[in-house]
Amino acid sequence: MARAAAHATLDRNRLGAFLTSVALRLCIDFYRDMDRRSRLLQRGALADTPGTTEEDVCDEDFGRWLLGQVQNLRGREQEVILARAQGISTAEFARIHNISVKAAEAAFTRGRARLKNVCAKALEGCAR
Image (cartoon, rainbow, N blue to C red):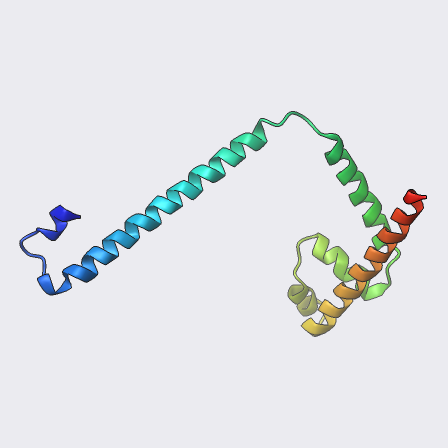
């Protein structure tokens, strides 16, 4: 930065703005590099985990059970929950089905609430 500031053709009136811009860009580059390295280390740590854990097996089993419970939901609630499970946003679902986004979000909220109640009832049965 000092060598650039000492350059003969540099406009002295813009020196402060130039140095500020360079310093900010260097800081941004530094933090981007740190973030990139952090993500790389995390990815490497995840790759080192052996096989499937009991928790993974339980999560998969719970997912299958919950998907079965979705089949018990009514019409639009079931459709929007399954669409969200496939990665379709509620706004996209609304556009596909020619309904308002608010109606799609309401159906999604109702469906989630019903599934939450089903899960709570199932857990009550386990606690006894």
